[in-house]
Amino acid sequence: MPRVRVLVTLKPTLLDAQGRTVQEALHALGYTNVNQVRIGKVIEMDITDEGQPVEAQVKEMCDRLLANPVTELYAIEVLE
Amino acid sequence: MKFGVVVFPGSNCNADAYYAVRDVLQQPVEYIWHQDDNLHGVDCVILPGGFSYGDYLRCGAIARFSPVMQAVEAFAREGGLVIGICNGFQILCEAHLLPGALVRNEGLRFVCKHVYLRVENTNTPFTNCCRQGEVLRIPIAHGEGRYVCDRDTLQELQANNQILFRYCDSRGAITRESNPNGSLSNIAGIANERFNVMGMMPHPERACEAILGSEDGLKIFQSIVHSALAVAR
Image (cartoon, rainbow over all chains, first blue to last red; front, side, top):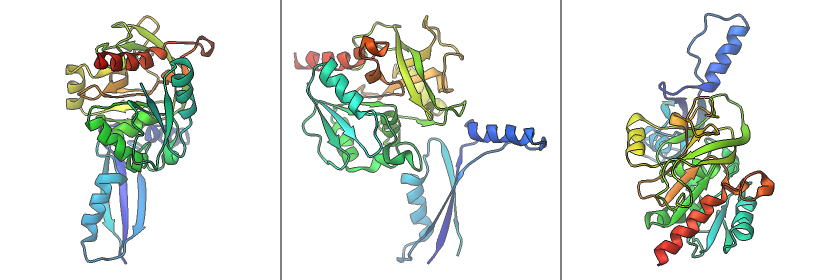
């Protein structure tokens, strides 16, 4: 049974307010060499193989539900 | 004119919207449960504020696929009037009934306060009782209300006058300081190209009586009734 990991990130053109705040906190802790902090989501799932290509199916899930094409990008990784 | 207020698990402004329509506007209204696949013959659908389905994944992302939203999409395609308030606006964007998306406020905080809105287009079913450039005072209460879209979409919104409300100061000036969430171009509310679907982050249902601090929100509901009467004539 393939395990799939989807990484959803905000488009680089969008301000990531959360990432910016975390970056400021890292700077406050002394890690002043940190830049461009971006925060995304990881979604992992098991998929029962029903003969259709897993990656195509997950791509469809991303386009329909898991990511918003207006604001987000996604990457699919089949783990095993 | 009959209104329907959709209730999702996690909606929390449905009672306010229901009260504003029934008691203040004095129009018939009923609740529509999210599992319903028909709209009970209403003339206008209100998608209220709240945290539908816990706002898991993204605000409005799960609600968008509920049975009632399939009916709302069909209703909107036929020209039916739909107004989405706050979470309702987020759902309409997720459902692609309105362009763009609503993301985390620039300042990251949940902002709950009265703001000023400038009415940018009065020639719509949602704003015809307002004056062009009128400044409305209506509360917001959201953590994810920063409107974003790509450059082409913004140009289309502007060219078609689909931006109905912009955050402004008390005198109607569109300033950076008056933008509570970092919305693109100070956008607080937009309509679709046909002007039968409208979404706004501020809560007009919370500003329909003087005792609530403002009656400005009532103008939006009065506009909807007014437009229906105009069609009936």
